[in-house]
Length: 139
Figure 1 (cartoon, rainbow, N blue to C red):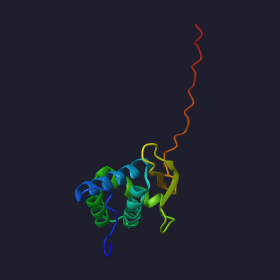
Figure 2 (tube, rainbow, N blue to C red; figure 1 turned 180 degrees about the vertical axis):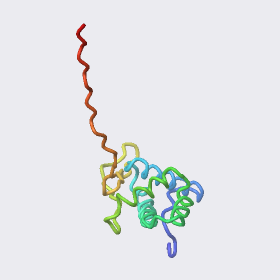
Figure 3 (cartoon, rainbow, N blue to C red; figure 1 turned 60 degrees about the vertical axis):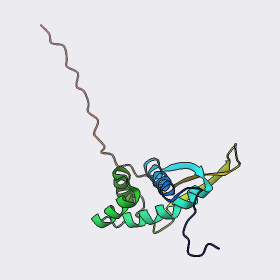
Figure 4 (cartoon, rainbow, N blue to C red; figure 1 turned 120 degrees about the horizontal axis):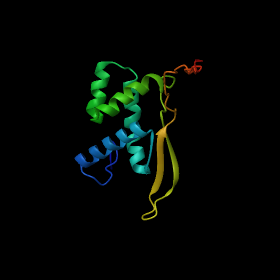
């Protein structure tokens, strides 16, 4: 029986499993979605939900805890910025897992894990500049 055990082993040692989950979480944050197996997607879903909830607080302590768990400053910074705009309206349920078939070699369930809300892109709108053509001078 597996009483008091958390998570799946994914046929890896502790260090390899930890690094795999970190890499999957970083890729999900950077790209917004990724294709993987069902077991790996279910393993990172709860971790990502907790990271987003922590990042929504937006303070320095939350940043340090998130950085310690992810281990990637760029992904941590992107998650903290997205948490303010992208996930502000939600309290939970940030992740979507969609099944899309089996892998060809060993018939594992393949899924696509992605964020529910799209990324909000804020760009500065610049006014169009009109070029004034100079008239030829008469001599």
